[in-house]
Image 1 (cartoon, rainbow, N blue to C red):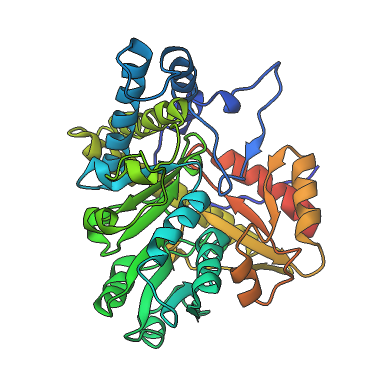
Image 2: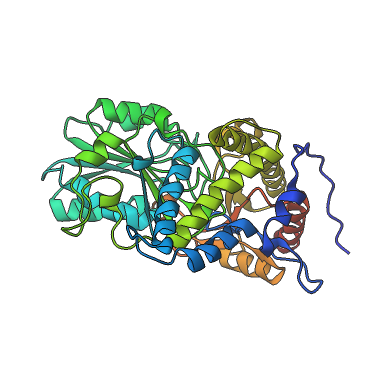
Length: 425
């Protein structure tokens, strides 16, 4: 029988067993253990309270907004309270700075049309080699439609981050927009958005930030970032399938929206087309409540925002411990190459998304073997198409990606490493 090598890692104290009890997908059924979910960079499991909130709204608020009868009044309440909750989650000043839509990609495609009305042929936009296609393709399409000039911002292969000097080299007085990545969905690296955004805005550019991979693992404080827009996806942080956009109030108010003629011309309504997904908005509010509850469990008190801050403080330390363990032991496997930061001293500069390739075994074969052992992980480019190309990797095979979440355990990491070591070692 294979004996897993013992490696001592000082894991932060965290009530992971209590957390797991809140997630129905993590409970054993018919004496069968649940899957090991390490596909969390693509989407997380949901707490029971979120699932219940969606169901309750479908029976009590399945109505359009603006009516005088109970189900419509309840739908109005859910719409407003979910936007207020996300404002607290992201550290926004105003509820009307929060726009909710079907997905981050849909929101970005939509808002890019409005931003395009402020740009002119020959203006320049900057996209990065570090981003998900959801924050690249919409701008490439806009450039094609309007005759804009596209400039590509690389990430530094030594630091795995976007450096200010590289951004400075691309900025001109014709730069209209800079689309930045907060944390890579392939390398896991976190950028210094506040610094980068300040440089871009000083050149007169709008700054659009993809925080989809950052929001599940690090606290977002939009008012400290100097950006104009920030987008994230609630299904990446234990919520329903929705995208959320924060926009600076003055910028949202000035933008022309693609909307029906009789729709409101006020943000956020003017950017939220059609009947809202009320049941999912109820789940979104419950998702924020989950973080609030987690903060309370970790002995944090105060406002909703203060409890959310506490939840992130506790879970970040815990996830970092699991990530260090995973990286250190993956590095012991011959022929395996991690694409991202591996130095434990720089763990704060990455989220717990770890991608790797092997010299002789394809990512697809690794993913298949993990799945046969009830371990969920993704292979391929994972829509980090520009990243894969920038790294010179096979664009179809891509990488094997492991995404850790706050409900994962040390035993699950051990089990995953055991399977990988048998296959690759």
